[in-house]
Length: 387
Image 1 (cartoon, one colour):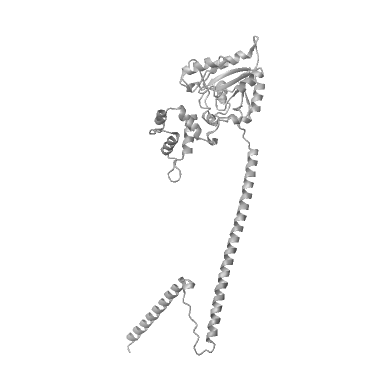
Image 2 (cartoon, rainbow, N blue to C red):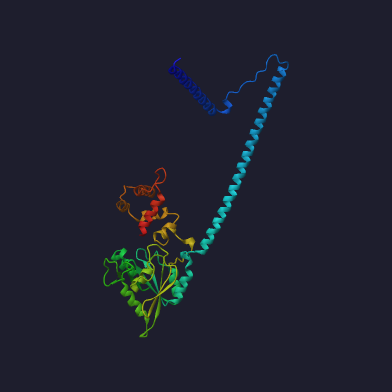
C-alpha cells in the first residue's frame, strides 16, 4: 500500500470520528433542552423466569401510587405556604407604608409649623395695629371693581377708632375716563376719594410723576394730588405736625405700588401675585409724613367667601385655587363669546366645557390618549384674566 493511500484512509477515519462526535454533542444538547418529564426513561424488565414477578410488580405499582400521593400533598402544602407567606408579606408592607406615611405627615406638619405662611384672614391683628398706629387711613380700591374690593368692616374699624379715611381709586388706566368720574362722584358722597395710577416703571429707575389729565404712561398719575391732601392733614391750626398714614385694602389692589410711587423709589416689594407683603413696614415719606404698608386683608368669614369672586379679583394665587371651573364660568357670563373667540382664535362654542376643550387643544395641553386637559386650560384663562 502506498503512503498516499494510507494517509487518505486515515484522514477519512478521522473525518468519520469527528462527525460522530458532532452528532453526539448535538443529541446531548437537544436532550438538555427537553423537560425532565418528557425525557425517555428506561424501563425495568422483570424476566418471566422470576418466581415472584407478580408480587414485585404489585409492590412497584403501590410505591408509584404512594409517590404520586406524596407529591400531591407536598404541592398543596407548598401552595398553602406560598399563600400564607404572600399574605404575611403584604401585611408587613402595608404596615411599613402606613408608618412611613405617618412619618411623612408628621415631618410635613413640622415643616409647615416651622415655615408658616400667614393667610389673608390671619393678618387681622396687623390691620388693627396699623389702624391704631396711624392718623390717616388710605383704603386702596381697584378701579375695575371698587365695590367688590371695598371692606365695610375696615371702614367701620377706622371710624370707631376716630381716624380719618381717604379712598384711593387705583389702576385708573384700566377703565374708561367716564367711569372714573362716575366712581369718584359716587365714592365722594361718603368719604374723600381720589383717583390714582401707580408707577409701573422698572425698579432700577427713579419713579416719576405725571401731572394733569390721564395719559398713556408708565409713570405715576395723581400722586401729586394725594401728596397735597396728606400735606393738608399735617396742618393743625396753622402748625405743621407729623402724621402717620396707614395704607390698607384687599390683597393685590396696589398698596405697595402706591407707596413706591409717592416715595419715587422702589422701597416695598411688589408683584402681580397676591400676598407679596407679609409684614407691617414703615416708610418715611418726608419729615412730616410716614407711610405704613400693611398686608392684604379680607375680614369676611371663610363661610361667606365666594371663591370664584376671590379668584377673579386676583385675591388668591391661581396655583392654590382648587375649583378652577367655576371662575371660568363666571368669566364666560361676563365676557362676550365673540371677544373670546377673537382673543384665543377659536371657532364658535356653546358651553364652557366646549370652550375649555377648544382652548386646551389650541394650547396643546393634552393628557394621555389625546384627552384635553381642561384644568390647565382653565388656569390659563384665569392667568390671562388677572394679568
